[in-house]
Amino acid sequence: MAGHSQFKNIMHRKGKQDAKRAKVFTKIIRELTVAARAGLPDPAANPRLRAAMLAAREANMPKDTIERAIKRGSGNDADSNYEEVRYEGFGPGGVAIIVEALTDNRNRTASELRAAFTKHGGNLAETGAVGFMFERVGVVRYPASRAGSDAMFEAALDAGAADVRSDADGHEILCAPDDLGAVREGLEKKFGEAAKARLEWRPTGAVAVAGEAAESLLKLLEVLEDNDDVQRVVSNFEMSDEALAKLSA
Image 1 (cartoon, rainbow, N blue to C red):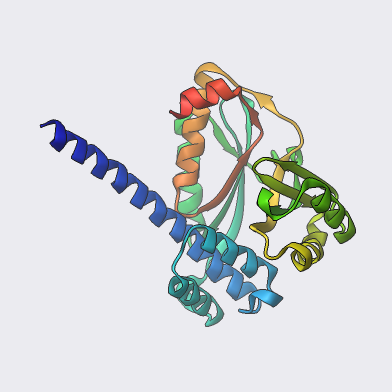
Image 2 (image 1 turned 90 degrees about the vertical axis):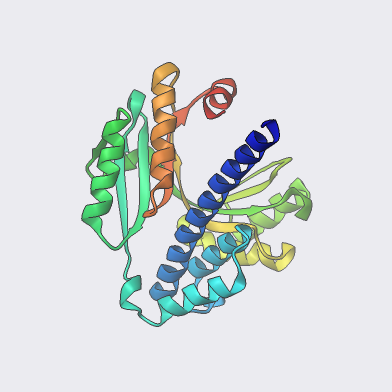
């Protein structure tokens, strides 16, 4: 019986991992399709498509799946007509949340997100309600093994970056949104292809949460990220490492 139970537990975990992987693929495929539709199907001439392809490779997406998604977007397939929408709201404890989505049905997506916010102690707000609490930045990432911190700093400075943050996990290079392409190209000439290169929202301040508010917030963020239409979720919460580890277990 013990072996049988262990097997069932293993299969349950594998099933959850497979389901999560499928959702990741769904989101990346949608981004590849939209990126190809918005510009040229050549990643060298389309920074957004290049960033999507980097994400696809990081997720170990098969090459033929990537190519089909790009072909679908560049072929003006009516079924790939997704719209970019940004939603803003407040979570438990007054935490500000931005949700970026790609959807073929704004009403459906808004309804699902509103229900998620309400169920977990938050509320979906009007566009612009929390956007001023974040800034848009270009982000380029490299693994730590690619270069030393001094070498990366000098190269990033020469390429036009605004800041470099290096630690044991790697290098994060920040720049103005309009400079992302130039910074990425400058760094890749010296260090090869970046692990990531994209625009991101970064909070300008933090809201501390704890206890029940923290627990409800993490549940809300998980539900939002699990939505097929949602591409990215960013918030300005601050929580101790111990509390985060305990609530995420």
